[in-house]
Length: 163
Image (cartoon, rainbow, N blue to C red; front, top):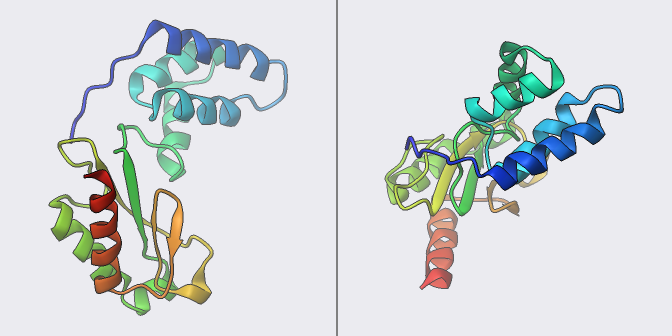
């Protein structure tokens, strides 16, 4: 919730090296953003400014791309990322109740990260698993035919692994 990111010199140097390679090909922005997300864990305004200077692309355009695609984040994410699909098939089968279960259990809203940096919660649109609706993911693993109880159980299992 408003975690300040510190850009390390070696991370900035790594991103600039990646951009050198991407500039040799058409359309360097998307591969650069993927690298930035991997290197920093998010793409805050400070990183967008570096990309803007290096690639000669307006920050407004970069920010528009970053905020449009759910793959990119402008804030650091937690160690564990939980996403609940709110696409049509999942929503009509009760995914909002699953999202509410995670939100209540973690005491955060979608788009937020717990104060300890352990968990981020997201509400996503279709993840392409409509036949398993409703679905949620934890660290990329898909949980299908989900219920609030299966969400509670999956979270309890994850917490047990941490202790």
